[in-house]
Length: 103
Image (cartoon, rainbow, N blue to C red; front, top):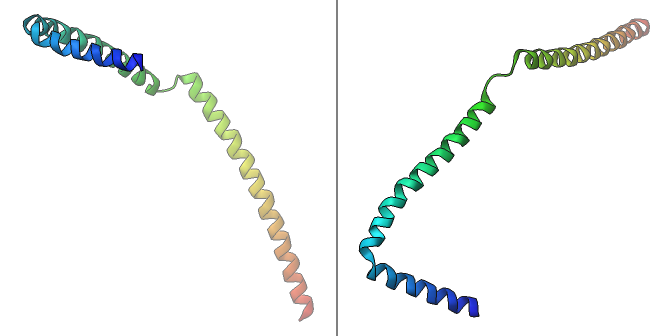
């Protein structure tokens, strides 16, 4: 409760201070705005540079590593599918031979 009353009192005194010292308040505001723009712009430029740096193309060595990993995965999948095709061909031949025996 004490903090709440203290906050209200500080806000009230701040409003009175702005009206009493309006001229110096404007000078302070006129000096603070360019400083805030300078600091905000510098921070935005740094964050933008950091984002651009993350999106730069991969180095040649990293590209080769990623490509070799992808190639090995594709070879494994191709081998798996070849085995599956061979298995299905054998089943198809077996079914054909069984159907020709029945006739």
